Image (cartoon, rainbow, N blue to C red; front, top):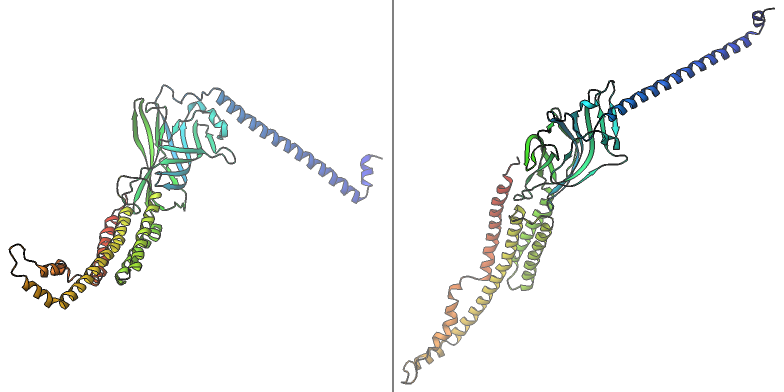
Length: 432
């Protein structure tokens, strides 16, 4: 009997089991062959990319710029600003964190492929990169969490892009005449350290050269605008060098200064006026009130100056605090005058009572001495007694109470006039 006949004699259930086992074995073999082929393809692609990169770096000298002894290479710049922070008036600087990108063409890095090559970290230093530096930089840092934030993309056409994430502390020349109602322009300058205009030129990218992080918050400032410029040329004894700039236009938010400086100082000035409603005879109350307001305004002024640089011109807040100090000091000085007139008024009342009570005896004594002897000079006792009365005659209508009544009107009126001159003068300046 043939083997095929033996197979036909087997039960149908056993035949189905044998068929399923044969199908599973074929599927396993198929998948194994497919996996091996994919792995082989991936290994071949990786090997091919590595070979291309090795060939590029083998024939590439990172010490020499592209187009050596030829036309200047154009480096296209772009930046994504992540944050602007720590804008300090005391040190006149600010901190910027950004993704800084540079693009250029290097014909030595052209290769035959469809995909670009990515080089990260230390490998990015194996190709030529522009020698960019930031003038007026006080401190800088290339971020390295969790790896060095630096990468290079090389396209088959030889176009190269270098991207890095950096934080810079840059100087910012501030004009503080209108502080805290001022506007500032802080710049980011980019230059080449060793390549002059015959070798390298900077250009900003035409589409979106500068991008700001959405909803970026800047402490105490509002970013009004940001512009780019690449037409500047710096001239040194070593030659002319291309440069690019970013200008940040900032306007200060003065709400905190209104709440912490202006309103408290106004209240102190108004409190100092309360002394005009206190009786001039209450010396302890008026002196304590006047000295307290003077010392408080002086302390506020000293605290403000600690956070500001020492400049040779007067700032808007300096003028405000100086005038507030003058007003509270004049209130204290007004009490000194009121106290003086109070003493004068008391003396006048005393002298008037003495003259009215002893007038007849003084007149009789004066008449008895109208005929002096040959060796004696006439006495003018009446004149001597009336001398104090005559000395304060011009002050007869000036009293402490009248002085306080006048101060209640004059001081608020002068302070209102000062405000009408102060605020329009400094708020009328428009930011560029």
